[in-house]
Image (cartoon, helix red, strand yellow):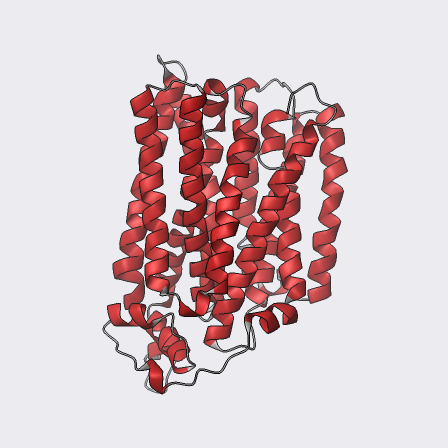
Length: 412
């Protein structure tokens, strides 16, 4: 508070901006989480194609390849156009998924499966635009913004799981109920993506605290914020501003432990979730609800854990401590193997809960600790680099997920 009792300009609108960041995080993954959550439907119509594993594997090359290009050129890219393009791609792809199913009347076949794969590749391109763009943009703002955005990412999983359980329960006993639930589900996801386009284009740039951070970044030589400042009614003259900054290579080397940490977090998580849970956990008393419960359990704990670092004494900031904690998670691989082979539902649900808990907590700790001690343009570059490593970890984890099929009764 200032001496006159008024909130300083740079703090005005902080809580509203945090709320919008949460919703923008939700929109960054709600489409993809919709794909994961309706996996039971795709296993019903594409029984022989390993849809959960194949679609996840299709998604990642597009996400990682696009992200690599965008990271290399991040200092020259208009962040406003990048993020709006990403949310628009998500909106169009989710709507296309709905139209494809309507047009094919919910039929399977290799042609329709290829169509779904094509749309999933488009999701990957959108993901690279939004996640890298948003994390880079928020990295030179308040750490609370990044944490809220990351919580929104996890909330997308929890929300889609909740909606899927509700639609399954409502339509389970009706004719063609599984498909009806999926149609409603995709329609809601499409609406959420449209709302994200509106929020980022017309609401987020207008908050005083957001203007403050973007003006500060511009004064430090950032060329990525000019369009967002213009949308907020602020003109900048970048040619008169300092342009010196560390190279991306130097920034990466200085933060290589954080980069490896994020890579390893998602290698482990995606080697188990979702393919192993859909295909390698066997048949249990919960029947067709079992996998949906496991997915929902993971998503809920992933969401809860992303708020834990907001309690200062629970936040891990030691660089070595983070690395040791992340490496210890690999003990979950034999734990899941023996639980799937010998354990019951309770043990599997407990393991999935721990997987989600550690995934969300460690992700937030790394991404909120890393962007310190740099100028705005350098923080934006580091945010993009870390997201690239995160997506690389996801890609590697998805590939390793196929190893669970070795020695099983299922065909590759």
